[in-house]
Length: 364
Image (cartoon, rainbow, N blue to C red; front, side, top):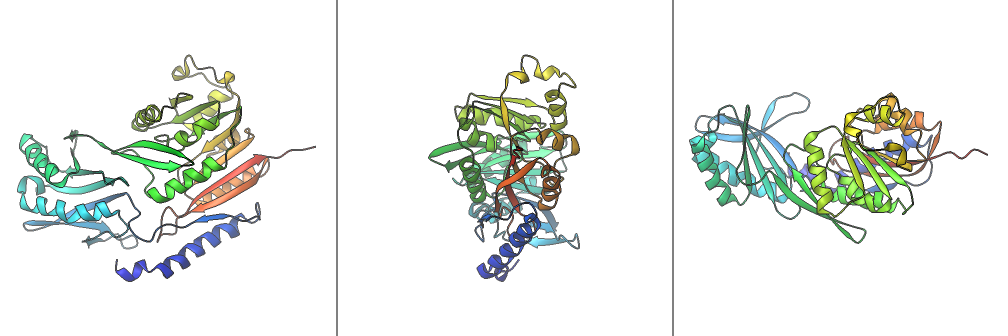
């Protein structure tokens, strides 16, 4: 990518175009103003993954071209955080100076925080032995970044496998542990704006919240104080573990988190099936009136849509405007859109993060 690609005027036009496309697709269900949150043009992405290609006695970073699927060399990654760009040449220097670190290395992953912490995962096609650990530890000390080594059946954590992050949201400091291999929002600046918008859109109420696809409790940490109780679900073991850590770190005690899918929760909520993991938890004691969903790009499946339609208020966070509109078309039978906002989580791409709040229709 060249510098021209990051021209601020080009970005404004691209953002206006995809934001306009979304507004046009939503106009059948909502005609009031939609809030817009553009991103920084560069250095907004807190994580990155690169292939490692080898040329005789040296290695270099590479990525896959989206259309042709061909690999191309990467010497800098301007959409990546400043920390990633600082570490890229420094890491490559140590790798090229040391055969033990370079040999059969095929991938590198960076995870950074807004406070300058960095975690680097080196992925190999070989078994990692004590000699590798010693060389990697020396490199870790020089780079001042945490190093993890991975190969088939191996995960060697030299110091720790996470970075610490924090966001200032409506007079609160929210702290998070972002763990390696656990999903985190890639654009920290936009994530903070998204958290602020969701928090602002929810008034304190004597009701309870159910959250599906809660991940590492990114939204839960922000919203928990607004509700009496929160019941959150997530299918990933690693995400549940990280979520529990984040709840403790923020001194949040009104959240119950259970590892289960949205379909399983729907079955339990509608009393169609009992689950051992809900032993000791009485769902009927919750006074739910709000549901928050942050599904994958495929959107909500049919059982989850039926479940969602039962709640008075729906907070829908989407990374795919096409499936979102498809879901809203169905939810519109019972709900109306109360407010909406677009967040450019993915600048320079066609993708757009969207927040929509729907309220159940009141019939006289």
